[in-house]
Amino acid sequence: MQAKSPSRRALSVALAGAAAIAALAPLSGPALAQDYPSRAITMVVPFPPGGVADTVGRPVADALGRYLGQSVVVENKSGAGGGIGMAHAAKSTPDGYTLLLALSSITIIPEADKILNRSPMYQLNQLVPIARFTADPTVLAVRADSPWKTYADFIAHARAKPGAITFGSSGNYGTMHVPMEMLKQATGTFMVHVPYTGAGPAIVGLLGEQVDALATGPATVVQHVKAGKLRVLAHWGTGRLAALPDVPSLTELGAKVTFSQWAGLFAPAGTPEPVIARLRDAARKAATDEKVIRTIGTAGTPIQYLDAPEFAKFVAEDARVMAGVVQRIGKQ
Image (cartoon, rainbow, N blue to C red; front, top):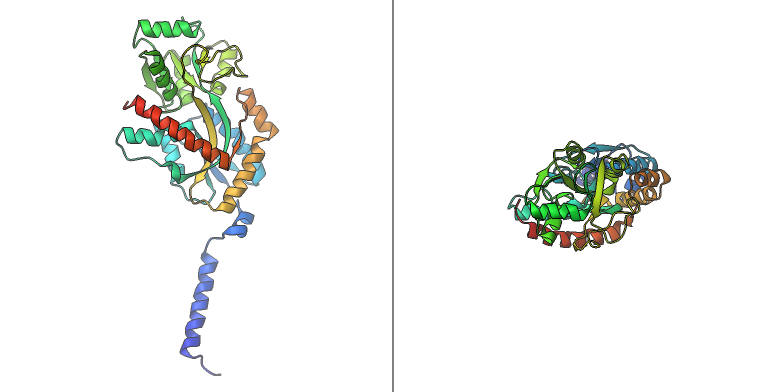
């Protein structure tokens, strides 16, 4: 048999090597879209159980799992006002198997890192917006047995006794801290901030008389209001809330501040487009899923869905506004 020439032998080696590399390389394009997901997906919720992110995240994870055909497992990874979990998700492998269910604090924390002259835990461009599910104004809640029957009572006390009122939050610069700082600025009052590791622990602190008040999403307090344990004095929206129709907005009451605590789904930047497309489709179905609507609605929160392009614009504008707010708050 005739021996191969050096050039033919080199070509054979090259082709064999290319075939081996191709076999080892990850699938992409239509093939990847067809095969994804082939195993369970982790949804990072960067707060402890019991808060808004968890209230939204769990029914959404259940629905995503049904529409994607694989389990979506919620992992509560709390700390630093949500920063630890958000940073973990931002730095995860961009393969669609680690997702993030974040609150609006995702746009606040990078600016807070600048104010505090610390290395950023993450940057917004490390994450890709997939879908927004909810966007609720925060509400001002106190215990039902507190001396404040109205917002006017509350603010009068804060003005008469600076530092006498304490308020809890999910952490410095989080979605429970920022609206209270905005209220303090608008009313010229001083109240003492007590940070917790998440909304759930902060609400436990309020119920347990460790703090006097807090700002949070309606979904986390409606059940306690119905049970006669908490009272809501006002909210940071512009109209009336469906879950609390008798509660006035701060704008109505003369304090020109608004703040929305929204919840949305993100993936690490660099996640293949076919995977993003599958996630967008599943998220769109989850947002219209009767079980999701009923579960989140029972907690007092309506679905306010935005698909990826609109959500990306929303996040960019929210980041711009929140940067100014954080700069006014300054170092904590």
